[in-house]
Image 1 (cartoon, rainbow, N blue to C red):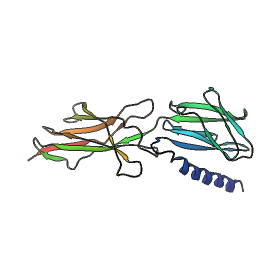
Image 2: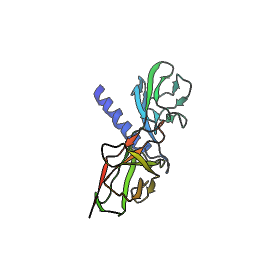
Image 3: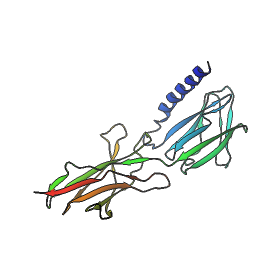
Image 4: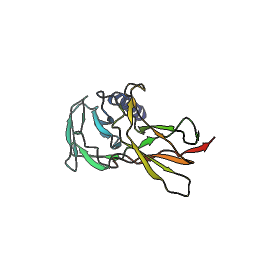
Length: 224
């Protein structure tokens, strides 16, 4: 019976999360649910990222008060209602303890958001002096209701493994609205390598919010 109730709670939370992950158009954040029950919050320790936020869902019949030990957030949640902390609460990674009604101990763990940057082209071999368009996508490990801010992508290059990568360009992705309701962040740049070159794309901006990310190396050979 206990296991059945637990499954019911989990299914309900997943349903709510599916709805909460679609806030107003253009929003780059999604809510991560925490159930408030008669026996305490579920889960007692919830992990969110710096591009998501905790959202309490009161499944009890009485109002509950969520109060963080650092004083940054206190919210009251009525029965069958939801509530979250002010915008910006989850912007800094860390472990944040809170209580429910001053008794039940719980915490929210905020982690840096993971992201992915890709790099490709139509071919690995070009004629000497020819141009080649490198392109890729910038996305997050966390499913977001919108692409989020278009952080710059740094393009690095080196002739071989014996040499270090050096920065050759910084490109700002643009939203491709043809890809889904909210689009995707895509970037491209034209290069003209004079010799065999290894390229790599790096996303290293906003380190207080995002993890650094690197694409797989892309090798370009010069032929006839």
